[in-house]
Amino acid sequence: MSDLRAGPSPSELDPVFNVYETGTDGETLRYYGSPRAPSKSVLQELWPVFRERGYEVRLTREYGEWVLIAEPVDLGIDGIPWTNVVLFVATVLSTLFAGSLWYHLDPFSAEIVHAWPFTLSIMSVLGVHELGHYVLSRYHRVNASLPYFIPIPTLIGTMGAVIRMKGQIPSRKALFDIGIAGPIAGLVATVVVTVVGLSLPPVTAPQSLMANPNAVQIELGYPPLLELLAWAVDRPLYYDDPATSVNPVVIGGWVGMFVTFLNLIPVGQLDGGHVLRAILGDQHDRIAAFVPAVLFGLAGYLYYVRDVPGDAAFIWAFWGFLALVFSFAGSATPIDDRELGTGRMLVGIVTLVLGLLCFTPIPVQVVS
Image 1 (cartoon, rainbow, N blue to C red):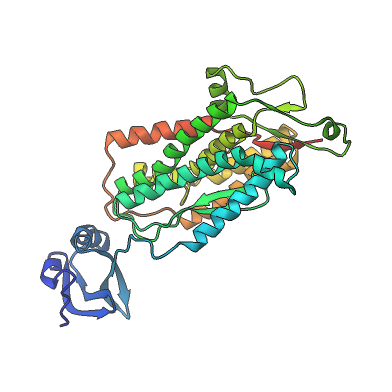
Image 2: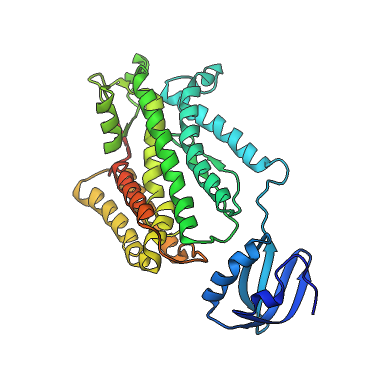
C-alpha cells in the first residue's frame, strides 16, 4: 500500500470507506476500496477530512472499483490572467462605441472618449455583480476565476460578464451565499449608478437626426425599481420633447436591473437556480420545470395578444429556450445538503422579490 503522507490515512476514512489500496498520480491521491454508506453520505463525511489537508475529493468508479480521488485545492491566480484582461479592454472599447451612440457622438472619432460615463456605469454594475460571486467563492474556498467580460456589438456593447467556478460546492450555505452575492452586490451598484444618472442632465438628439426619415428610435421599458428610484429623487424618466431622453448613465442602471432579473430566473446554473436549489433542495425541480413554459407563454402573449413587435417578444422566447437548456443541465449539487437557516431563507425570498421589481415585459423595442 502506497504511503500518502499529504492526505488522510486509510484509517481516518475507515468509518465510511474501507480502503484496500492507495496510489498517487502526480499530486492526485487515489484511495481504492468499498463504501460503508451511500455515496452521498460518504462524501458528506469525508469532505471536511480532505478539505483540512487542502484537497477536494470525489467518489467514482474506475474499471469496476470504487475510488476516492483527491486533488489539491488551488485558489490562487497563476500569472497574469491575460484572457480576462483582453476581454475587459475589449468590453471597455465596445461599450464606449455603444455609449457614443446614446450620447449622439461620432463613434469613429476622438469624441468617443466622452462616452466614458456610460462605459463606467455598465462596467460597474456588471463587475460588482460578478465580484460578489468571486468574493464569496473565495470565502467558501471554492475555486473561481476572475470575471470574464463579453464584448459584443449590441445596444450596450456587451453581453454581460461571467465567472467560472471550477470546484465542488461544499454546502447549501455556500451555494446560497455564492449564488445570492452577485445579485445583491449588483443591485447595490445598480441603485447607486441609477441615482447618479438621474441627477445628470438629459441628452438631446441633434435636429439633423430627428429630421432623418430613416432614423429609428430605441425605446426602453423601465422596470418598477427604476421608476421608484426616479420618484424617490424627484427626477423625470419621460420628456415631452421626443428628442430628449435620460442621461445614458441611467441606461447603465437599467442594464443592472435587467441583468439582475435575468440572473434571478430560478432555473439551472443561473443565480436564481442556485438560490432556489439552496432553499428547497431537490424539490426546486418542480418550480424550475415551469420556468421555460412561463417565458414562452410571455413571448406568445406579447406577440399575439399585445401585438408587440417580434423583436421585443423574441427576447423572452430566446430566454425560454435558454431556460429549457439550463433546466436539462440541472443545478449545482452541494456536498453537505442540510437545510438552510431561517435567516438565509428570508434573504433569498427578499432578493427574489427585488428581482421581480427589475422586470419589465417589454425591455427594449425599435420604433420607427
